[in-house]
Image (cartoon, rainbow, N blue to C red):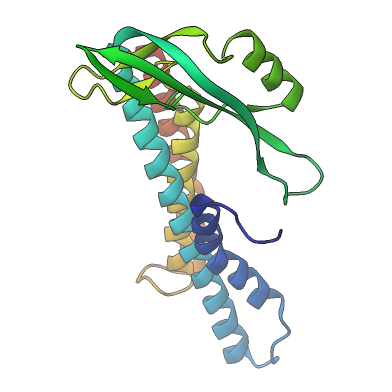
Length: 228
């Protein structure tokens, strides 16, 4: 299959389409007239800017939500849970020869006399890995009937995870998303779609702000990791 098989895949295709279109336009031959060439360059940079901004915002917002929910789960309450079913599924087989596998677990727990069902492992990224390793984890830990500890939100007991917290990589992904947005905004200014300064001055400011933004985001990620 060459088309995405999940809503997230379709959203990714939608966000990167302007970026890919801008790159294609940059490579298409154009008249040697200076005005036509400049128009093509501005259009290409503008489309690439839209793609970078959309991709960066999507990445930063989604990972920020996962990070916030993961940090919030550190205060949740533990309850005994029972694994009802588990399976190792193929995520997407259309991306080259390397296949990615995910472990899916369904479990049941009781809180204040009410039975609930959950399927979330953690607020970090899905447990992906080698099929043999995930199969072993399924047999050793998440086999049907296994007793595990689920962590539930005391205010919303239907919300539960088997692993609290969030991955430290989420901070790095948020930083990458912010950098993509900054790069897209400056590229939009270079294209003339956003009132600004000369091209050389814009590039100079782009390099300076990118360096400062990267340093600030690294410090922010380190602070979040230390706080966790």
